[in-house]
Image 1 (cartoon, rainbow, N blue to C red):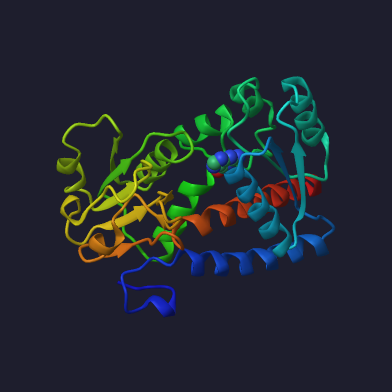
Image 2: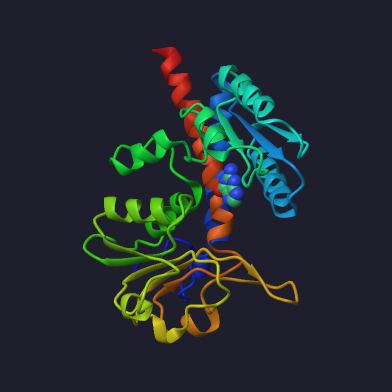
Amino acid sequence: MKVGLWYNSFMNLIDGKALAAKMQAELKVKVDKLKEAGSVPGLAVILVGKDPASQIYVRNKARQATAIGLNSSVVRLPETVSEKELLELIEQYNQSEQWHGILVQLPLPKHISEEKVLLAIDPEKDVDGFHPMNMGRLWSGNPLMIPSTPAGIMEMFREYNVELSGKRAVVIGRSNIVGKPMAQLLMMADATVTIAHSRTKNLRELTKEADILVVAIGRDRMIKADDVKDGAVVIDVGMNRDEDGKLHGDVDFDEVKEVASLITPVPGGVGPMTITMLMEQTVRAATRKMNENSN
Ligand code: GUN
């Protein structure tokens, strides 16, 4: 097995933090080139309300955007903003040449329809890949924008030369953000995919057969060594805080690292890749726009 990142050559760890840093450096070069050619890629982030986790995510997204040289804007709207006002703001960003990526942080307050909001974002600028058109394009095998978490996981597979073709993959979790797009990306890479979820019976029978196991179910350290096939590649999307405020995944890392051939830690695995992929999609959107304009 060839491992692309030197500091990880002797371990079975997938170092998401290091891979994200490498990709950020590469993105910065691309951004500099776009700027030289007269286009500054722009990412507009909209946050409604004061959800503490969302505030942290949004801050991190804006920070990373600035670090790689993107033009970034964060609009913080009060919890009481009307759906109409939010939709109007999105439309302004849709129309503006300055912004190539638009992202509305979820969840939204109850009086605002998430469906309407996601539908309102121009699919070409929908860097989250949550617009039904982007979801449909992904499922029909012709993706435009891909949700960042599964996109980041695919980058990890590439970097660590994980063979997917013909392999048995099990995805635990069926969300639109992670589970479903992850399953489709694995299928497009010729894996044989099973989607499991909280109601799946005899889960262990499935996970024990998985060459590739992606866990996104939101239960602290639920997957144990006994659930995992020897030599499996294990990807942990979970982020659970215990009573002491310590972060854990959905996989019991200390146990499972003894049986997995490759495993992502939490923190430092999937998380750092997610934001970087968002930046990548923004840069890609800006590049596409520039190429369109020069044709
Ligand atoms: N809330 C939790 N994860 C995400 C994400 O990936 N994108 C957006 N927009 N909101 C989120």
